[in-house]
Length: 73
Image (cartoon, rainbow, N blue to C red; front, side, top):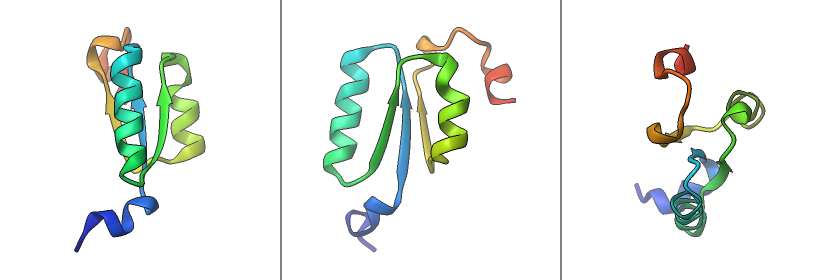
C-alpha cells in the first residue's frame, strides 16, 4: 500500500509555539496530501481536537505549559 494514495483521508494536528517548526511541518505534510491543522495557542487544543477529530497529533512538548499527564487526561 502506498500511503501517498490515501494521505488525503488523514488529518494531522500540529501544536507548537515555534512558528518556523510548525509552519515547516504544516507545509511538508500538506504537500504530501494530508489535511493539516496548525495551532500555536495551547488553549485551543481541545476545541480543535473535538471539532477536527485529527488522526494524528504532533505536540511540541517544549511548547506545552500544562503538565503532560493533565493535558492527555
